[in-house]
Image 1 (cartoon, rainbow, N blue to C red):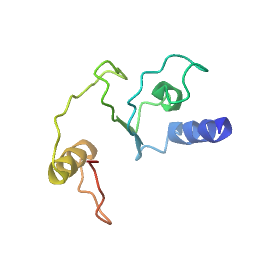
Image 2: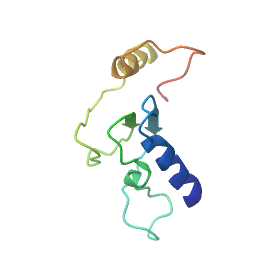
Image 3: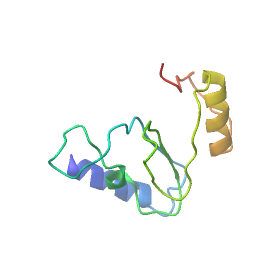
Image 4: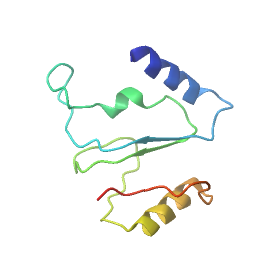
Length: 103
């Protein structure tokens, strides 16, 4: 798995590869360090070192801090979630309808 993660991070960091969105969903258990909790996850391990692209991390942890911009949201409808995502990527979403919020 580490080889896959390394390859992904290299691909996301390529200079000409700037139109991507990485979604890390449901980071809902505090990371306590490797080996202590199999369910814990450190999202920093899969965030590329790049000044391009976009990263969206979802969590119910009020203490989770990643990057410089945190946005706390209330429960939103599927339409509201789509509008938020389209606003962030600055273009309408295309293709099949996707479920943006889990219930």
